[in-house]
Image (tube, rainbow, N blue to C red):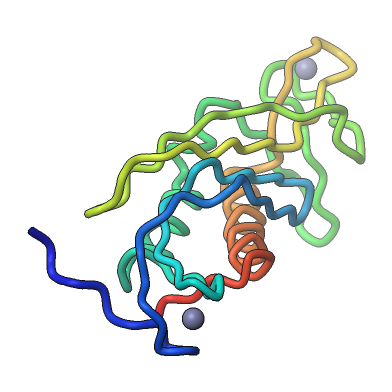
Length: 160
Ligand SMILES: [Zn+2]
Ligand SMILES: [Zn+2]
């Protein structure tokens, strides 16, 4: 048996584990949807992550280069004004995204039931050879980090 959950930090009510409805975050064109994420919740609807490290572990996962590594990255050029070139044929990429690529990530967080995160990442299709790429793993990860934080805020969930 697991030990009883600490009472709600806001209303001192009893907490129980639950599954959240899908919630979202979007920053810099990176859209994240969190599906059936477990949490603990009181009768008044105050939400808490299932454990203290959960929020950070999920953020790390969303920022992981492995999450975005399946799409090729553009070649960055220019010192002051950055330009992005196609990794296939070296043609300069369009200035704004031409579409999105969807990735499904299974979030396996320690001591929690696995759940799914759908990530939509802006991609740039080369006018020359048609290859799609993301600008860079770092920039995509930075936006994903902010989008995760925004998603947490949108449902008002806290570590304690
Ligand atoms: Zn409460
Ligand atoms: Zn190309």
